[in-house]
Image (cartoon, rainbow over all chains, first blue to last red; front, side, top):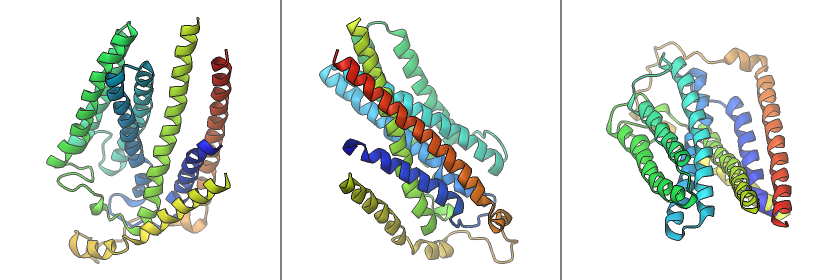
Length: 221
Length: 90
């Protein structure tokens, strides 16, 4: 129980987000209307994805240093969990876009950047699947994973800021100021981000434990 | 466990308090951003749903589903823990 306090924190934060996210007052904005509440659910998906993919990157670098196969298991399982959050993020974003911008998808730098990022990580799994030998697979995919995270930074953080975009937080403006993230919204948004990140990490640890068990049983056989 | 509950409570309280640190933002935004002029019609919000109070039903349903998923996740977590013990002791 002592080790699991952060899981309790995750549940409390997300539950608070669900309740406060629907019930607290939000600023009345044209076009957005009540959909502004999506901020508490759509945006934390991406925060969670970036956090978990950073864990993946970290263990890929660690693998290259020490060649410990456990690091490779963590890196690959974390990438899987990161993709789950990324796909949820892109689907929720698409639905939100349909009712605010009027289309499921618009050729916008941020949206296309997000799609390209997901495809880059998809290629990571294809790369892993195509290599048979364990150490070789771990080494090559660790190198690719570093490249993938750099591309993620470029496509999600840098390019959208250099160009005009419909998506808030771009075009030289890193914050949500345009949408008037007032103090009531911040009171829900920050716990939301923390809660969803921790929940994502919990899912990740479950995947990692399964991955490690799987390898152990394979060796025992 | 009790110590951790204290920690968690402290974090949550601090999160709430941190909202107050941004209390000035709204007035700043009003002077700098392109706020809609007063003449514009009010933005349509789901006021009816909030007035009737039935929004609480929606929140209740989502909270129940979330609770169910978390309960499932906890059980899964415990199952893996057991499996880990079994395999590691072999």
